[in-house]
Image (cartoon, rainbow, N blue to C red; front, top):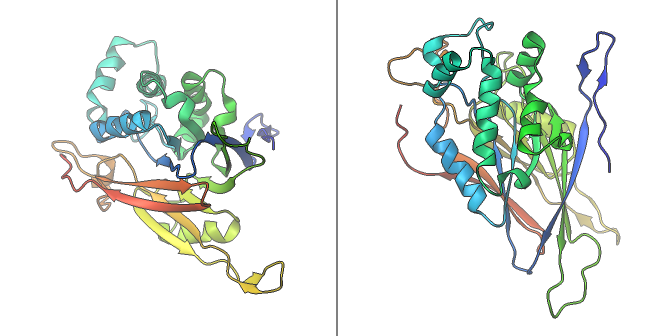
Length: 315
């Protein structure tokens, strides 16, 4: 199953096409559990980003032998001096300093390279990345600054690995293949296939709750798990599949589909600085909660888990 590259339109710009990325995940042992960590809206480069929490998440994935991850866009804020939202006092301290130490490098590139550095310094993170969704912040910096920080970030994580780039939305198909043990015959075929539909999200100011937009997405595309970013909240939804007939013409109801809006690493308020969410009167987003997908491929089961560290976030 291949990838369909975006085709240029008449103006030479990329035109997003719905892509399908296929990954094979080998495993051993009938009791194996694989964990997939969706990271949404990191917004690295902003002072409001909880970098301690972000580094802890990256450390956890790196240390998890059965763990993989994906990103749902807005990995960096990519707000720069040309952006009307630009305010120097909202930059992360390291970015504020780097802006003066490297005047020949744009702010977007500094943010992109810092995130790539944090990923590369962890031994397994680069090869555990399954797919990367393009967020509106990546799209905006390309439109206004002629820099493709979306593909550029992936190329710095895994050299010229454009096949990780899913665009604003698309399918990630995971095929879990059990490898034979010492006393077992070689495995044949795919033990379990899981279809994920990933999207960054659209139109935060156009009305409709994030849960409603998740439900709309689940009605448009057929998958097993749906993951959505952009809205800076965490919410989950289970959708029933239509009743049908099996091969013996018995009535059955297939397994439910699961969906989640996956939160953010951006804090809603910070001391001594008026950030965007405060000026706009936005509600606080989740500060210590994340989503994990747990798959037991030999049993053919999967679940969405919402975890809460129950720790107060320092603002």
